[in-house]
Every structure is written in structure tokens, then in C-alpha cells.
Figure 1 (cartoon, helix red, strand yellow):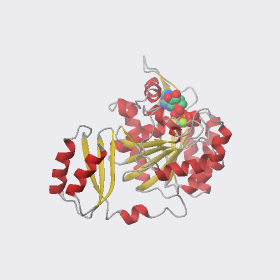
Figure 2 (figure 1 turned 135 degrees about the vertical axis):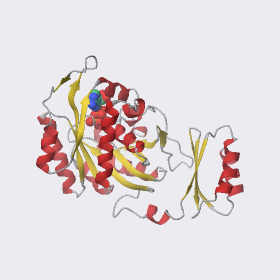
Figure 3 (figure 1 turned 180 degrees about the vertical axis):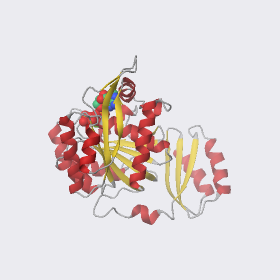
Length: 331
Ligand SMILES: Nc1ncnc2c1ncn2[C@@H]1O[C@H](COP(=O)(O)OP(=O)(O)OP(=O)(O)O)[C@@H](O)[C@H]1O
Ligand SMILES: [Mg+2]
């Protein structure tokens, strides 16, 4: 099948270097080293490719002009090809909804026209495969060295969970974590990406600091719940990123208040607006409040995040508002 695709591409673009041919779930992406698009040749090639049984969509990306910048190493850090900006979604404390927020934020950024990648670096509890509905699916490799990103719901993604078994002891994961993350991060054939969102491991330890430095993060979003104990850890998170010169894009208060799914009554179970006050005190932006609601939980845990499953929902609107603020902060 792949040789059929390759032959068709080469008949039309014999003189250009073909940088990459990627087929994922019927979606074919061809990358050509060429300055100017040749629409006539492209159309003829697409027609032939679409007649193949396995191909349902074809995109052609021309890369010659962009190549030098894409390949420029991020200063002293890991070389993540094709990715313009990298932001982390982090929390000082575990279980505050970091992954739920990272996944929905990534989808909301994509809804605003950005080309988005989501990278799950949470070695202690990778949950992106579950939340995007591909748990247990192996990452595809054509050459045995590099991996194709998963393409689901309009974003590219990859999870460290695809490569580490759940029963591996935490201490092992910790000691080998950074090497494994670097290897994976730099060996994925990312498409041209505007913003990569990283679901970080919870906490503010050595691994988080090393990751932030090596990834040369363009910004960090801190997720907290309203309880005092979570807020103390959120402050630690902000301080950690400041120490390594990563700009704080803002704080999100997750599970901010409870919304009854039956009657819509609101209850400020854990107190309210603590994160907003903490953000003001630390002079960092406050990005928004996400309520505690069963629709958010069920969709995340069932592999259909709410921003994807219910585009018209009021909760999706909250994530989109946060995404717009993140884009504004990054610009
Ligand atoms: N706003 C919300 N409303 C309802 N449930 C939520 C909300 N945010 C997160 N949850 C649920 O809370 C649980 C924990 O969320 P999540 O896994 O995103 O946290 P986390 O901070 O990534 O945890 P960890 O530190 O273990 O990685 C999940 O079952 C998730 O569906
Ligand atoms: Mg998580």
C-alpha cells in the first residue's frame, strides 16, 4: 500500500525531495521540500491518491522555506522539530484536573485555528490515551526509529503512557523519566505545530524543573482547585516556573464550584475565588473558573472530552475563553 502511495507521489513530484509520507486513519500527509505550491500537479496527484482504498483525505505541506527555522535547536534544549511554541499545563498537587484541563485546552486552541499537539509527559499517571480514546493502541512507526503522532479530534498527540507499562515501579519511572521523555518527544514526526501543550507530571520536583528547562517552555498554565492546600502548591508551581524563567500564562481554578446536573444549583463547596486572589497576589493572570460538573468528568474519562463531544456546551465556552486568553498571552 505504502509503495503505491510513494510511486504516485514520485510520478508527480519527481524533482522535489519528498520529506515525509504519513498515513494515519486514512489521512495522508505528504511533506515536500518545495518553495512554491504547484496546484496543478498537486490536484492530479491527489485525485490518484484518493482512488486508493486506504486514503480518505490528502494534505500536502510544502516545507523548503520553513526548514531552517524548524530545525533550529531550541537553545541548549531538546530539538523538537516543527513546533513553534511549547506550553506546559502543570499543578503543584496531583488530581486537581490537570489532564482534563490540558486535553480540553488543546482542543479549544485547535478550535481557534491553531495547529495543536498534545504531549503527555506525566510519567506517574499518563491519562491522555484514555481521555482521547486510544488507550492500548500502539504508536505507529514506519522506520523503527521515529513515531507517527496520533491524530484524533483535530490535534496531534503522543503519550509517554504508550511506552511505559502501568506496572513499572514509580521509582524506575522517575529515574529514567527525562531520558525517555526526550527520546519520545524528539522522535515523533510532528506536523507543523503552532502550539504544543504538555500535560506535566504533578509537583515541583527535579523532573519538572529539568523538563521545563530542556523543553525551553514558552509558558506555563497552573491548574489549582480552590482548597487552601491546593493553592499553597499552586504558589509553589508558579515560583518553580519563575525560577527557571518560564513565563506564567496564568492560573486556572478547576472544580471551582459544584453545579448540580439536575437543578443547576451552584454550591461553593471548597470556598470560592481562592485562585483568583492568589493570582492577583502573585501578579500573574487569572485565566478562568471551570465548575465541577459530571459532564466534564464523564466525557474526559470516556475518551470524548467535552470540548469535542459538546461544542455548544457552556463548559466548552469556558475552555474556549481560556484558550483565547492563552493565545493572547503567548502573542
Ligand atoms: N471540572 C471538573 N468537573 C468534574 N470532574 C472533573 C473536573 N476536572 C477533572 N475532573 C475529574 O477529576 C479526576 C481527576 O482529573 P485529572 O485526571 O484531569 O487530574 P490530574 O490533575 O491530571 O491528576 P494527576 O495528578 O493524577 O495526573 C478525573 O476523573 C476527571 O474526570
Ligand atoms: Mg493527569
